[in-house]
Image (tube, rainbow over all chains, first blue to last red; front, side, top):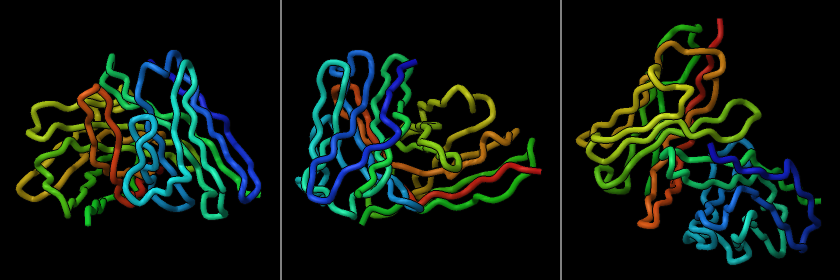
Length: 108
Length: 122
């Protein structure tokens, strides 16, 4: 089955840019979606279809996908961005959703 | 406002059964695939099951096949998950989520309910 690999943690200072990666075999041929989950809350979609933002998601959130790596980039990071972030793809060979292991973003 | 509200979680002994419910509002429930996704304590997200709008198709993660059954009642705007032969490793928060499907063969989850905790323990 398809495997997505994320770094367990990323740290960034307020106002700087955070980059969270999601690795997978030829992931550039798939469409990647990203979720933000704050402690004790349900996940929230922040990026879908590689780089589209749902309404209400700040333009500071940006997605890209190429080769074997998809990246969620958060510019001008704020304290309120501190959360776990998960990438997700659809594995059409098994008709299953696949999630990455999640990355904990810490704002220093 | 689109809203999903889960209920039915609780403490159950290994080998027992539980039925989760998800009440949907704010959108035409019968137009969408629906899903269950779970999260074990301190762990990541794991997709569990999907069901098509007309109940003609459903899919499960291998670890729950033969034990869990996803169903829906479009007249009641409700999604269900019948969980039998429960194991300790099924302990998790179970989220109900609307499945968005793109023509390009990809799908994502939006929105999610607040989740309901299932604890399997003696």
